[in-house]
Image (cartoon, rainbow, N blue to C red):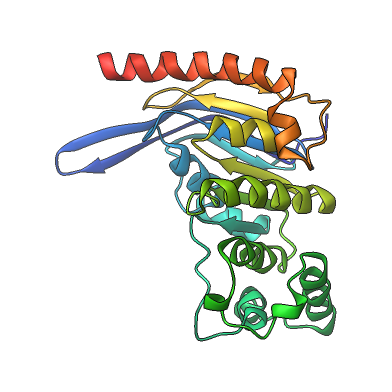
Length: 265
């Protein structure tokens, strides 16, 4: 099977004057092209640390990271593969219009070509934001702002999308609809995505596969393919399906066991 991203035996610890705090322990998994992977685990287990290592923001202390079979080390990741990173908040600049916000990455990369600008305009149309391109962020709803943040991320033609709880700032009803909408848009492009979330329902509804991490130092304790017959574009139908409930119950048991163990240590 073709592999876009491969992590082999990744470990990482934080260091300060008080000593060492292990965060990740011997993490290994592969991500094929076009997969939507969700990673869940107990709070503080190192999920965001893992994403930072994939992005090249932190160097792994042990282990290797491969992109299409090519080993990459630390900050080389950003040079070898184009990475789009969506954070918990949209970080749109209020003094710029939506259009000026979504072309920011192109400006920074000095790639404001006619082809890329036309691609941005098409994304604005596809994501139903074209009519709002001259508005300021404060004039848009939370869900629309997240779609704008996704366009900004997609504009640079990333090979890999990293999503660090990008829907956590939204209210529950908006979050359900927006997360499903953005996942649909990502799937329609065939992009590969890794989502960090603490929400099992979100992980099952959006992902092709879910990885569960243990308490810190995190290791992979469960890997579950998500096979649903319900229409993924209808999050209510997904969550009412029998397959969803089976997946949720199993992942909940694994995650609850990890959290109980963490509390007893």
